[in-house]
Image 1 (tube, rainbow, N blue to C red):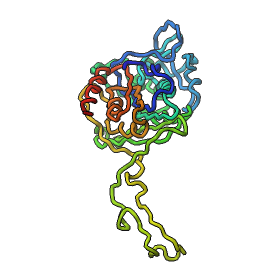
Image 2 (cartoon, rainbow, N blue to C red):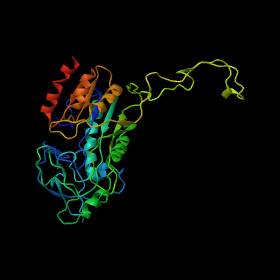
Image 3 (cartoon, rainbow, N blue to C red):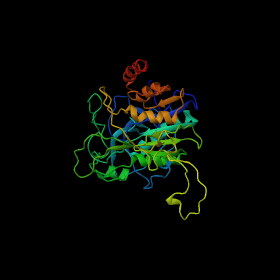
Image 4 (cartoon, rainbow, N blue to C red):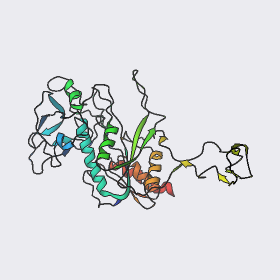
Length: 370
């Protein structure tokens, strides 16, 4: 369904499980309308370029100190850093107009993303779980990738593009990073989520054995992305998942050690009683580990960031009971909803685009189940 994820049309505590992947920072411009963020209600916005200054080297300092409160009031500061061209700010109320992921600073991107996570927290049940796949970015000066329609917007550029003053150091000063450095966005996001009282249960690693080859020669090719598993409370619904045993545990001739009396390894222990021992705690396998090796899944339509269905399935099985509701607030092509329906859960998704792709994929779910 088409909806702004900042205002989900759902009741409080109505969702069992949320699985999503938001737009990554400074990666691409999507074919969706720009939104107005942090504005003052009723303001007749006047858009222009806005001076921005990072006021603290400590990332965990209060967001309101840097960007103002929820009403969008932001402290005006003069800066020698120059102007930021990416997006536009209202010169009356300091609102920003643009797409999530195209903010001129990492902090502003995280602030907007956390606003959406607050809305997710509202609709998520107290015993629910939240799974977020979010990738990192390298701080550089190449333009944001083209949109799905291959239409490049010259205003949509990474923050290191030349500012009005012609000084590339301005962007680095604002973000506190040097060119070619990883931004550590997943880690920054996870820290802020914990600061907002989410409980981080796991950092999962999605290992991509068929990752996109990299042309760089001065670093290693990145073949993984993190997935963060959050919950709201200490007690939550979770169904244990298992990895199959890769080799038989037959050192004693089978799955069980049968007590037949004293054995050589008992000598000197003083042990006089024996019991049968199960050498496999659970015949289903061992508790699932945190590195999930799953290839990316080809998708012929005009969406370049689809989940593989195999990645979503264990999250739904672990985090949502049968008949429960799974939500994806950045539904994209509809993979989360598709897998939820195949697993006998109810899938709900919201996005500002790709409605036709979601409908097209969901039409075939019932046929596959028959």
